[in-house]
Figure (cartoon, rainbow over the protein chains, first blue to last red):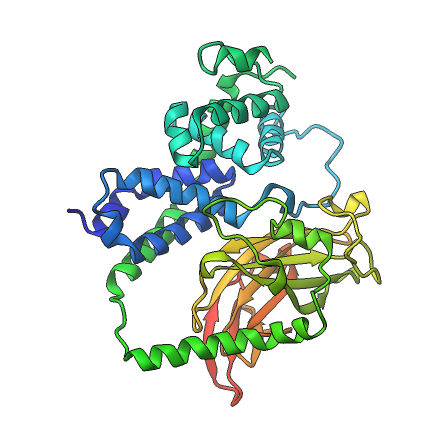
Length: 166
Length: 246
């Protein structure tokens, strides 16, 4: 049975990257992971007996991220964006990435989480449903709405064809 | 703009690559501290006294609000605390416990209020509310959720786990412009402190507002980059704790 220290140190890089993806923000991801580590340490005697402690921690990450930041609450910078193209980013790739990050940030939290678990974590809809404690159909619906908002056409088979057709 | 699922995968891969060595180091340090810290065993009676003292200390402020009836909370704050969107299994704010704990002023004259509410499962929620303009006071009827450029009040915040009666911690640094200057807000829980200051590497000090064990404020980016230390003192002027708010 792994000790908390052994487990946490071994899985830390993966957990930190997952927290960053779920939060859509490296700084917030770090904060959320630290909260989860503190709680996981407190309840380690229970967690270490689970079949999949990492899945449990992933669920804790999701709950903590929702608790720490809700979509409608984010303060946003009010400075004007520069009109001219950034000379350091002539092709605009960096600007496109930032635009996508901001659009994801404006999605409802659960939609954000579904995207992160699916497109970063590589989880199936069933696994995401287990993490979010909801039916797989809800996961597909959340994903479908998020992709529609982001103007991304899903490839049939990756999400339910019925959802894509809506 | 045409996007594909591949763009999403690339976005998350890039984001995950942005995890810094510093972030990993800080997390490993935390793991080390947690592993070293054995659960403290105290006599049950003393634990009860400490718990009661915490409740009384917190309840003092809440009683004030309760005495005036149900607290009138600006809608921006209620949205920031997530009352309209409770999440099963997460810490959710209890509206009846909301109270404004302190008010401070940004350099452009706008008021920033710090709100606190108890949460389910023993947690807590905090929210910082920025008035849309100097002299404006947000009310419960205000629209919310937009940025200052929309002519609305701004609020940011969230909820977390229980806070110990002696645990110092920072919460919710956010990038917010004040006038022409960009900077970061900060909220810090400083139990036991009777006076708090930011100490900068050049020796300069800045006093901060303090109420009900909380302090909050805003610093321009240039001063944030100097990584000031927040230092707290007891009633006798002795230092009792320090923490970096950024």
